[in-house]
Image (cartoon, rainbow, N blue to C red; front, side, top):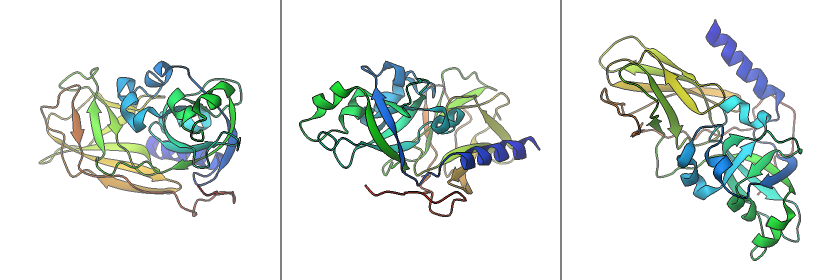
Length: 263
């Protein structure tokens, strides 16, 4: 029953916000240094600086979705044709934007300047805040499989905390099941509220196979890892799950028509 309620709330929240495929209008600002984004609410820490070449973003609560959207990718372009490029830049969400200045995003300095036409990167920074349009886009990790990084806060043998890395497509992870290899009771992880961290206090003392429920738009699917996390897992290690997530939200979402835009 609790599982059903969690999924129902997630779908209602998704319905209440505009569809992933839609273009949205807002404003964006930037941080003068990357510290707030690399140490942001998602909890990626120093890992964040290596994601998307440092093109990082903090999103408002309706985008952040209490941590569910950590790692989501967005294409953002500013609207001043004198200094802004038509393509804009692609960013990854690593933090929640709690500012009250009507900006949907606060970007890293590198991401903000990447929206400029060639030779206008310094000019665009002097604006501080810009009108933008944006839409969610698939994350692409062609050479990297979905992986998990075991947090240093994990305590063997029973407590494991982890983050998912290289989560492709337009996907949100909503459930994580652990299946012990060679039999045993399935274990269930829970998301640490407001972060990208998933954890469990009764970790099976065997190698485990991950089974993950992802949502893309209003479609859901189960993804089963092709590689196991060993019984002798270690904090700080990254384990390749041997699969890629590449689902993309399409036009079947049950929400109003909108401008899907073109980049």
